Length: 326
Image (cartoon, rainbow, N blue to C red):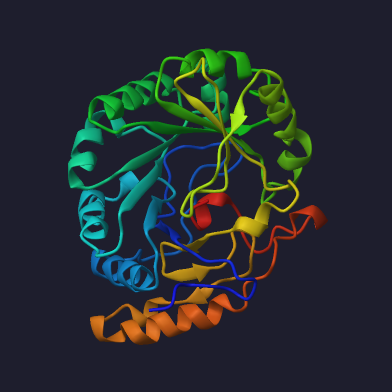
């Protein structure tokens, strides 16, 4: 079967699949007032997840990232991992988590088939971590990262959203932390969303200054794989860990786009900063609908734009990052 390709000859090997938009943290850049239920939502069932992942796998998707909200809040999360892992063609299964259940579940998830982890750690200072996330849980999250490495994950990616005046001056501390650990620390530029305009104006800082510093210190930029995320990754001979920079405002950021998103209620999103999304759920009720599902995804992909419009201050219809899985 022909691989997924849009009108700009970009091919898509990577699916970000949200399994819930519920989160128990209150991060300033995402859900500062905490999770606010929007009616009685019914999130994708395990069978619906199996069908949508199978459809994407049939078109060449190799990697699935399970996101939220906080995906581990689902009681059937381990079953979801097992289901995705059993899908022919899928060889990488990752999750993005706030890490609060990682210490107790890392080994279980690894055994279920999870191959990669991204954990959010926005500061190494406990008080600042509490200020940013609304939760005083840095010690538990750090213990979870150690548990993941002990459980056999070859490395762990750690996400830190850059926030001016809060954590943008902590590069030295972060570099010291990863010097002897197999951790890819990823600094993510704060992105404008519908509910975060004022925070963006006050706290946005470009990752270019970190990139300049890394290059001056002898860090070398690595080549990007077909199903890698959007980070520019840098390595140094004196560090076991690496640094990734996600800079959505950088030139040609969208040129290498290789990922699509499906929300926790079954909508296909062609871009994190796009419009309302394309309904898929009506085609997830039975295995016999796979051909129609594949056709709908292919047709929708032809409408994918060349780039987002963040530079014009247009964040699309995304109210906050948890709404479609970041």
